[in-house]
Image (cartoon, rainbow, N blue to C red; front, side, top):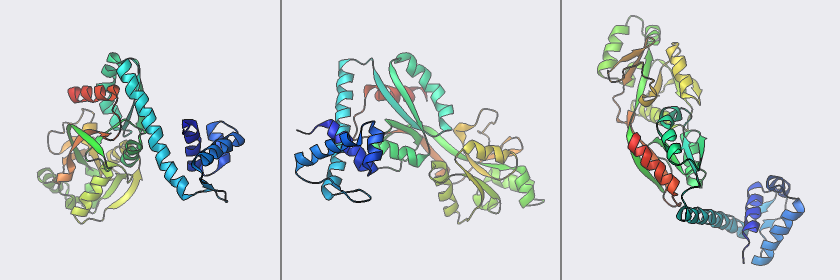
Length: 312
């Protein structure tokens, strides 16, 4: 009979491909780890590692690595499900979200959720869209809140609310790049915010891998523009702060607007920077919750989704 502890130790060794590092990660001796691996090899009657430098997996080892992950995930999901059935007083929920979006969404949801379910252990995993999609795929997060669609297979999505990507254009940039054309350009951008009108301007963009950047790149491609990118950063708030100082143009989600700017009006202005509604369909999307449809959904996750749909 397969021992789950042997599987856990084997999986760590198969990921590190170094018994010393794996033993250190598991807080056990290298001799103890080798013993667990040997037990598995005796049980299956095959070698799982090629004892070379560096260490490599045999074909049997590669197969077991995949199955070990599945079996350990199934064990964890089984315990979670039984615990939910027994008593919905304890649980854990890991939410994935971008660094910036959390400050607008979580204050609306988490206080109410925590009040209703005080014994649920909440965790927040922040990262860009690519990192969060991977976390969802591998079970590191229970659900992700972001712009649809998610770029990962086997994910079920629930729409929450509309989202729009605005174009933040400082007056000083237009004056510098297109001297004497400020009023005319602002009027044309207000009527039809086409990227071709500002194609010569410098752009401040969030790093590749973020959903807003992906959409921006797609809009550039549609408009056949090779943008002049003067800065890339992981923080979209940095992009906006530098745009407000006149360094360049950037893209900014409407949801993040703090209230000083009335973005219902085309060409809303804040600190001599106008926010325009882009004419590309890619700038208009939906914010949603995604979860892996192949993983067990705990009662804690279901309740979070219900509250989010109710209050967003």
